[in-house]
Length: 88
Image 1 (cartoon, rainbow, N blue to C red):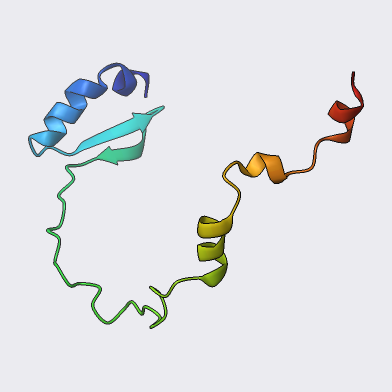
Image 2 (cartoon, rainbow, N blue to C red):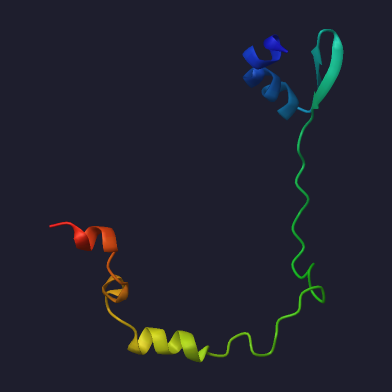
């Protein structure tokens, strides 16, 4: 295991060339390094699996009100901390 940690860059290079590498701990195989082959992305693979509510893009009146009429500095609307207010 220690040797694998020490030479990880070399092992990864061998794996990138197509070799599988078995890592052992105390003489027993515990892990395999193998080349990762990404599957090509297929556009539309999720078609029919996702549903979006018809009102998804509708405005939320409460949120619109906060943007249009809310305080410019929200911290001014939070009541002062009583401990800080009592200090001179």
